[in-house]
Amino acid sequence: MTQKTFANLLKAAIVLAFLCCALVYALYVPVVMEGIRHYEEYARLWLPCLIFIELTALPILIAIVLAWRITRDIGQDNSFCRANAERMKKISLLALGDVAYFWAGIAVFWFAFSLASGPELILAVLIGSAGLILAVCAGALSHLILKAALLREENDLTV
Image 1 (cartoon, rainbow, N blue to C red):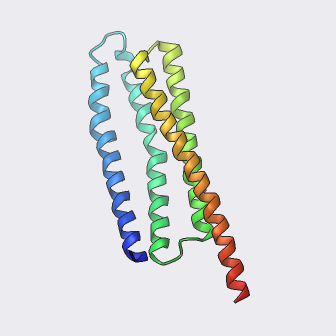
Image 2: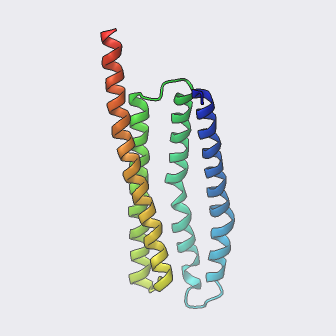
Image 3: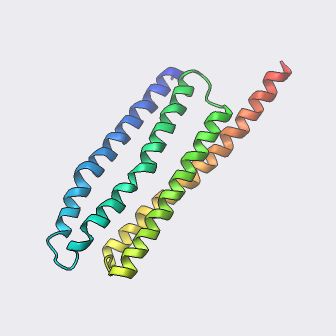
């Protein structure tokens, strides 16, 4: 597989991820949140919950833009550069911040409004755990890309 083919495959995966996120945040979340309006005790929480959930999309969208820039560099045969290491670090921090925001919001809604119970709380922990795993993996990749970039720079100086 050539570098250009690999970059195009990654771009296709990024577009697919963007489309999935767009469908979830534009269609699925509002439909689920509309169900909360029918319960009188939770009707007042409809807008705060919707805003809380929709704000979790911002770091995802920023990470998608950063991932697109990484694939652009991969297509130009510049996979291991400091800029890509920095982008992966930003993706890691975005994922970590999104997880912290998500868990803090779940804790607030759970303690203040007794909103999350059994299955919903387990689902929230699983979603947060997946984000945490993504943050750790992106951080590890950032470190490895930086090491490879430094080796590449060192080899370019010795030739």
